[in-house]
Image (cartoon, rainbow, N blue to C red; front, side):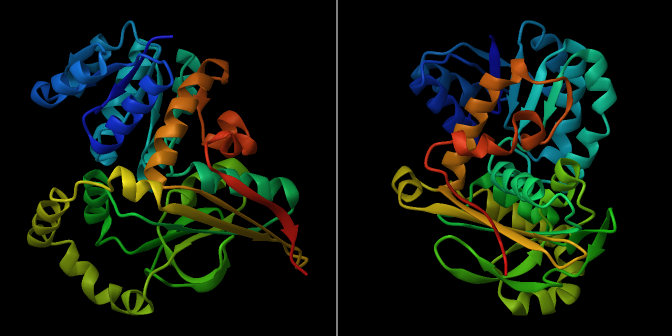
Length: 343
């Protein structure tokens, strides 16, 4: 199979390309900037192609699958999906953006007609949380509520920081009664029973508000991470400021100075995920997992997902709908605590 990493010279794209080569694979590397792309391709001994998204359909004619790693995905996902549907190329990306998941899901019928798999969120956003959600739904099919929490260590890349800046003024979002609704950031707080230790977490907008609903059908979903309580209280005051052009320009300038966690930092850091479901009769089930650094997990998942795409039914998917709830167990360094009933 011929596959491509688009945005290969970005932080995560480079990790994906390097891991693929270590596993004996030879993806085509691609992106818009020849000066950044060529040295990477020469170092890894791989073919490379320079093109913008407006030229993608032609550049993908002989490509079976593209791993799209060039964000911000709010701007780049739509054009790349267009190109993949036209060229009949399987698509996956590493987004965590709720609106991107929603937009891609709406193209399910187009993807089926084209015989194409569309798989946004094939990295840390949202593979571990989505698989935990599906495991919990399997354990309690009557669940009406789902809480998902995560913790990541090691710092962020430029792309992740840029996405955070873009969404910084938007407040929180949750799935309520089957619909995505705006809520104050940190509108709920709870204790998450991670595998290493319990932690206090606050509600944030995360991709599973979209994807976990499509994976499980559970109508009420809240996502959490560790945030100081004061942020939730200040968010209504700070959000208008963070949405201003000046704040966005400053935020993007700062994000560009972030290089992403080094190899040694990634090697000594990890991620944690916790999930809990409950139903109208008061039954509750929990599960958790520990994994490697989120960027290493992302690279591993992208390479593994590409390998599995050919056997996946066409259409718009979540990670668990494409590969099953056990998919996360196939990734290096992931340890899952089985779903258990809360008494």
